[in-house]
Image 1 (tube, rainbow, N blue to C red):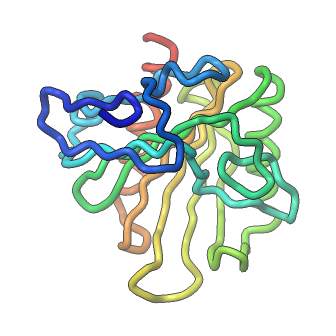
Image 2 (cartoon, rainbow, N blue to C red):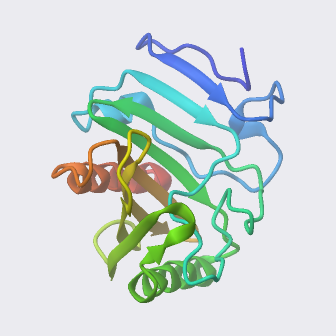
Amino acid sequence: MVAGISPDSLGLEQVAEGLIFTGQPVDQIPGPTPIPTLTPEDVSALGENVTRQITVLIGRSTIPVLCGTSLQQPGTSYGVDLGYSSTAFQVDGGRITQLVWPRPGEAAASGTLQTLAFQAQQCPDVPEVEATITTSGVQTGIGDEYAVFHRRPTRAGPDVVDATVVLVRVGPGLIEISFTSDVIDRPDAEGRSLRAAAAAAEVATGA
């Protein structure tokens, strides 16, 4: 068993990626109390065909540093690594990933979300990652508030990745749900991301 991950009743292939192998379950690694994450059953209940679950012990945000000003996105060179893991589910046409952003309180979490949306509207071009990041701003209706970000590659090639990201605030926590695919601008990507984000917010609040 690697990092406390054991096969489940669905018979899915489960893989642990990363550099930390503690011998402890992920939810027992020392650090801030983690927000509960989606399970394969949760994602399957959304109508997704889950074929693989992947746990990355040092998660990296799909949203890069914008406007040259870091908001300490998990996994960036400017970020503070507090041992937060991400969980990804291989589904038809792409991958759904959940990542928790560590924040000290509700005001800080809300400020991060609002600032990130403002940055994406002011500085959408990110040549360092060969992508553009766009958003229509912060909205309500999922969790306490949320924003949808679209990450589009600025070059062609077999290794480019297109992503739709929902960053939702639930109390003092930010939950990033991304749908990534090698198909540019999938018409169903935003709807699938929003459904997964709503489910993640419900799991986080115990609703």
